[in-house]
Image (cartoon, rainbow, N blue to C red; front, top):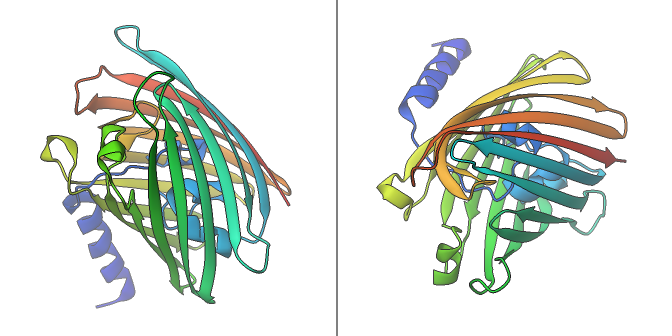
Length: 285
């Protein structure tokens, strides 16, 4: 059987046979547009939240800021702010820090990674969730990640999110999650992402689901994106649900500007339909 036939079979199985969950704590405009996918190929500072190991495969320093607002039925609305810095150029190890303010609290992420060999790396990050003042105690958890590049056209990532999953973590929605991220680069103009997930203690017993996305580059500096998710964590709402996204990005020397839109069609706890818009920019060198 040819390579093309194998690829067709894989994508049919991936798109129609996989059901999973995702628990990323923050989605940039690019992640929003891809439906939360990208654990095997984050862009710039996204690796802090999707796969800390990727910082070792992208030797740049990035300073990023993001803003999101959402609204829906029953006067549902809110905002999100995010700032981060990541250094992928230091020789000893690569690291970053990000701070996110959401409607349900704030999150601090600290990540570090290192290549084991040229095509394989590992990473670890810590997170602290700060609930609103006067609410429950702070929650702390860890993330373990790996990234492999077996061929130039495929990348594979493995992430264990919320490794500790203490009672305090569970109370703040930080559930342990096993994520397999895949990225396929087809002739450098079409990028495919399929990220199946498994969460043992997912709400409503829905432990499997997916995040998937397509990224098209009609020009070397312009990216068009779309994606979908099912039984996945919606970071700005702090709940699990299903929906889709789309967006656009412009990546020039030393600057990246992104826009993403997410439409949440349903959630496990019955929140109404809502729409989120997010803008972001990154300076890198």
